[in-house]
Length: 479
Image (tube, rainbow, N blue to C red):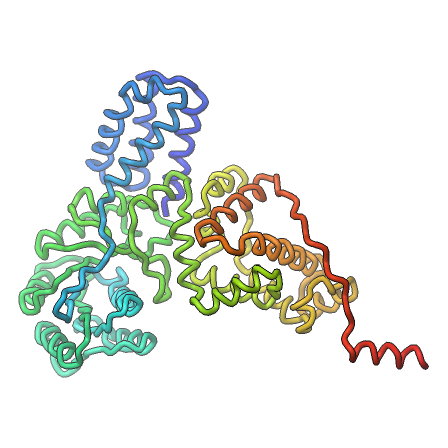
């Protein structure tokens, strides 16, 4: 999402940078280009017009025109306005002091509402709460089966009643069941339609009146563009929403819904779905999204993603190995798989500050199956080779390449990359997670711009054969 908008804005700011000092006429030209870029990104017309007017009002001040670096001031103004347009947002779920907290999800069919219920339940679990899913979508075939299957995957109870078609009664009984079982959160999966109709809205209103939910979230498909904004407005008129959950945020869509929803409805985006897996629901932070749009990266989200993938005990074990420089290829592949779980490598690179712009100037052909090949090479090695890759000579490379279906060049590249990464990790041992990501960011930028700093490897310890190897060697010589 936002790739097209990000490229357009980058091009606009590049033109400003090339002009040095700018005039009011230049500012007017830039504002027209920004307005066109927003409309092409499917931002609602009134929102785009108001955005440009606000930016122009600030940009026409002496602060920009008299500045020695006007493009930097202009970027800052656009950034602040993007944050203002999409925020402010409090991504926390306000749990009530007397459980259960009742959360009602509404939305059209196909928006991903049932899956989002499960993702939200998993998020509540991570925050120390005990959720209950209520299957109140009695219209869509297999909706109850789907929710029950998702509940089994999460080990979260599901309240379902297949005997009747009264969603109000199902929701009321679900809340009572949660109170009886001493559960903290009730998540209602309500019915949807292919389009908004009065019957649907009346049903949702009856449910809301019966159980008085503490939070009502509307689930919207980001790929529907301005239709999503119109849907949000109509739902909000009848239900008084507390927030929006935007699904398919990782899709190849233009991003207009994310930029328009808050401005049109006054209701913030609370969460975004960034993948199909149940752990791919993230809090929505306007400042981080604005940084991505302007090509500044999003290192905070990248750090949080990395921290979620590695538990505390494993992190402590790896920390000790990093400090000693004794990480093995098994550790390397395992951590690569975990950190990239649910994300493409290209998307993660874009979150590193400065790398997005470099990728625009020199597009990378990134093979997302590279980790699979790397794992095959590692599994073709002996345990000793995985722990001591410096032992891998030409004959071993040929054997590993045959066993993994790769080439000797691939094996050499893996070993070289691992040794380089291990040395870098040793240098980062003791740093905070944020400092590590900044260090990696600088390294990635240098690598992509062709100025990779030479890594000075520590002297490799001389190989000391084991007692068994020495006995074999003595026998060989005695023959």
